[in-house]
Image (cartoon, rainbow, N blue to C red):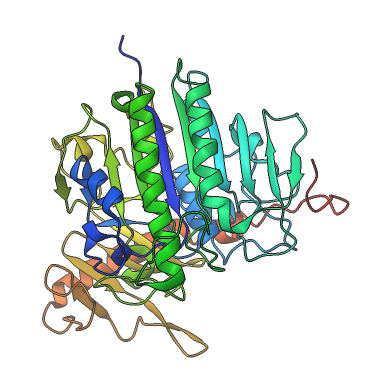
Length: 423
């Protein structure tokens, strides 16, 4: 039997759809990521499962919307004690026992027991930060399997991207004789922006461009090192982002940004998958897909069955080019509210913001023909009343199914005596 592929998921933090060349970016130089797309598959209609960090990462790891796990509202802050329920099925748990797994980079799914450390969720090794690098107190943690003590040190902000790629390659080399999975969860280009003084590129996009171009350079180094190790044709490498851009960065042709209610700019993110010999090179697809799909898809490539109760779908056939999207809709949440539904042609928006107001739009239906109007600039609800009624039904079904989870699965508190960052 052929060995199942290794998998490295590179997850940028707050990288915009329009920040990379293959998705239309023109200011920031990303030749290595663009080459990765030319040698792999690029999905143009790929969605993060949330418009901010914590719920998006929960969705990626579990294949379920974060509302199921009490993590749909905002993001975890340093004083919070909630986190991903320890019993949740995650990608590394589901890949056991065949795969060795590592989390390198940002966790942000709980930093006190019972939600800490990340090794409790199936990772054999962790090197990274408990949450975003703009939060305090902050330390870099590193260690092996659950039960072993973690080391703690002060992070070198400017060189975190370099460190995280180095640790990823070290793990790949150490586990080259067995299948491995790495979630390389970068802290860049989330603010604060601190370019690596050893890897400056002179980007025309300032500090933001510097940190994105450093990511790009390291993607190239990673791919070349996998080739040198003889792992290139055995390794699926995925590049994506946890949500849209925040204070800087480009949403491309899409409306709004990170945290922007239902609008595309907060959810539509880059997606590239490269696996020489396993996926066709140079393929571009507009099939609907989501980071919820990573768990079932990686399990499919590994020859393993997926759990039954998932919100994500296996898109291995989409990536191989021989199947349509398994999704007939993508549900978009803003905190615990269903905010929009996207189908292949249509987008129906039912929540937005104005100044400090979070506004339900049920009385003012907004229907967009995404095939003609990617920027969601003109509602065509008056032209397509039957479509509006169909989309309303989709919204109501999603609300009826998902929103009760918000009350049924409140955040799991940690013991009051827990230390902030126990070893």
